[in-house]
Image (cartoon, rainbow, N blue to C red; front, side, top):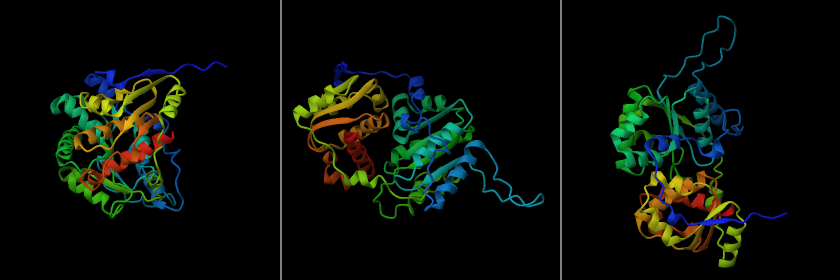
Length: 340
């Protein structure tokens, strides 16, 4: 049996362009959630809030009413106030993104969008606020995964944007990126979210989802580090097209490509290769790398790397700062991607 040679490409040589319509077309659930449904959500019987949230979100998505219990003349249960938005409150690894994707798939509408908070703010950054509002106006549903609570400027832009869209009839579903080791996680995440979007807080109903924090295991793990020979062999065995870039070259290139176009940087790849990884000391470089890691992770691409372990790419000062949540999520995804 003859193996197919891997085509090696360099991300630093790619200069992708996207129109506003193409950016909108990319706002769909990550491919690992292509088939996510409420039926395929695996409820942990030890946490009743998961079943309760699943049933309530299914009603939100389909507009169904709770089943009538009792006899013919039994009183219909009192329904909670209908709101245009729902917020899923819970830690990592309890299935919030699965349920968010299930909402997206279940809403019977042609114009609906699913993206991370970073993707929506990147859209505004690339197209401008007014153009983004016009592109999104008339959408039946916006799903916002990992709503960022650590950037006041971006949060204000998103609050204003969502306010305009809700006023025109758009419904919203959101989660936030509360980290697994955050003090008070599960008790304060919802309050933080509603406080940060105070102008929109009355539009959201909060649903709590408890459960075991599976992603903590990834944070406790270690990224795979290869030597030069292992790295070359891993890329050769990747099949299809694999990227091969020096870490510094990629970091420099990310500064020249708008984050909304990172998804196109990795088009057609079967693996991402990074040589000579080092610890980042510049906040802007680190945040761009986080956005890039999100796109790689959503595309389910394995990462092969030499140099410093990828769990050490963000220094202690960064992990103690205001963007801690972003960096911890990226570390979890980096570790998982090196084991893929």
